[in-house]
Length: 73
Length: 396
Image 1: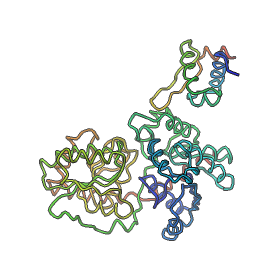
Image 2: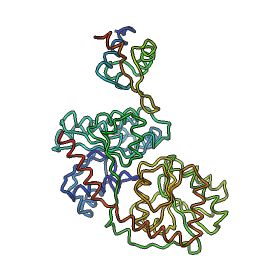
Image 3: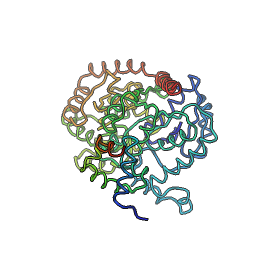
Image 4: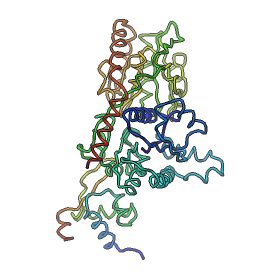
């Protein structure tokens, strides 16, 4: 069954709860397609639940913000 | 130890580096099982017989068509030329081939006994991760070249991902220079404390260093380029410098030794600049021919855009041939008696080549001091440092 936006974003956030990750790692953890994860990360960044802690042409690393951690807990 | 090349099968410096490391480790009493792609049918027994130290390196073959410097396009070209019945044996893409290698590594790990997993470059990192999951043993990830070095800022994202995950999963990383270490930190944000620097050495007892070949170009000085003809090695800067040098030193020959994706472009560029009679293209050289080429040359130029280490520069010094090397290289950290230039600075490269060719006292001093300096490099030192790394992860 197709996942809803909320389900996908929850999976992405839960994946990051265990530590910083790349898009690839989040995709593997959450079972969500790479491109889809990337799009949802952009949204989550926009609402300050996720931050991009490192960015280079080679790798992008994301982490939860404090706001997100408080919400999850 | 998971690797891709082992002489005589080699396409670049990785094979030599792994071979020398294994020899050095053996002399220090370390037993190595080296997992390699398939060797030619007769090479295994000959090789073991010829190289006594390597009788104690156990070979386990994994049938593969990848070479360490392949990109996805080159892999497809090789794959398309396979016989139809052979194609069934290989992955249809570069990454499926890496996957196949990783699967084979799974089986090999289950029937092997070892203390440490040592992996060389991105194609073996997944195999190392699998081996760790099965055995629980620590991984030492060796980084000989990053995707940054190979592509100059235009990375293949999938390769970068694999490279990053391998470095992240490693218990300890060995970089072949501070230059490589800094690149790994810069592009992958890896903790600097996790990275140890082990500079490469050379086999000081190789008889090929003493063959004293003489240049066939009696009345001309010779300047050598030797390496893969690809973006990373800066061959176009060599050609540009050559064009300038000839204006000041007309009686010079440029020896261009190597093959690679940029080779046709370089040949055309030499022709476009009307330098065809000043260039000699030898094609890919291997084995003792490499040493002969160094010995015939008056000066070796390594204009690399990004060179993680640059073992060939040490080989040149050991062959009594002075060097002009890129500052963007690992070897520039450990060598004093050498000309060093920024790879893009064709004018300075020209100045140094012309000075070398024009002033015998300068060339004599550089040659003498460079050769003396080459004596400080050997196989024992890098092997001992790698063993220190092994002991560090085993003790954790």
